[in-house]
Image: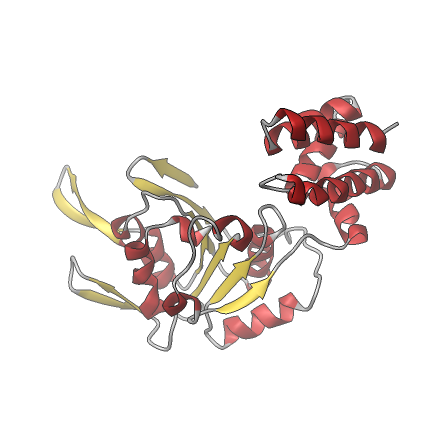
Length: 275
């Protein structure tokens, strides 16, 4: 179920999937996450956009047999959006739990994507859940909800993007075990692109090679480098019959920049990669 409104967060409550989400382990992160879960430790995933952080959480929720509640954070995200609020209905005013409260009560994994996009006064509500107390005080009702067995708090953010805009307070950062994510090594990334994009190995390898060349343009002013997600999008277009260069322009080049000089440089790299 996906819920979104101008007053609340984008929330996704995932049922426990019987099929494993596709994920290739890179550096022992699966065992480390499992131990964090068993030891009731909150987890912070750091890494560039589209490098697999969300897929990793989905995979771990499946592996641990936990329901996953995903919240996409934004500037207008309030404490009430997370915890809950009183709403007027046909039978009068009643309290409605927010997604964070539901996850705490049910023992789900609660994943806050791009947590630093939320206001600092909102992030503070996570503090008693991310240490030994594992509880959520609800000021409006006077209730204190103790986290059910299996509850785990997971947050993610892109430190490269946020460094110039926002960052997480040290008092919040030190409540989490941090996992450093990056784009997979070329062979693994090619395997991911081939599987998720539905193309053969040669096309996937060429797309990953292009992606790595484009990532070197960061030093020339490219704010965001192409993610694995963009490479997969290009692969899916190619797999559907779209010409390779057209697919790369639409799925990779155009989303990355509106700057004519950068667009020209990226188009040249696409042309050189698919002669």
